Length: 94
Image (cartoon, rainbow, N blue to C red; front, side):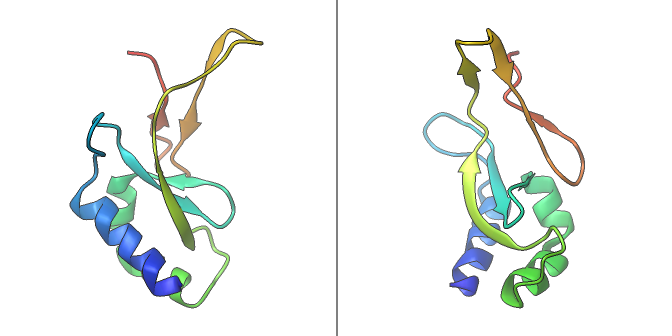
């Protein structure tokens, strides 16, 4: 299973945008935070080590999603997520 998660990171680095739609792929870490594809590339060694050895240091990747815009009708605002490493914003309306 951990080797599959390393393959997910490789996919994010090699193909950072989903098709169709063009949304940026992000890695989901075991602490619930996300990492953008640039941070996945820059920290690939740490991610592989933490993921393969199940270390809880913020680089243990457990999955992938895309940065699609979410909207909450109850509070009338866009929900924005941030990369845990570089603070890049996802979900902003352009």
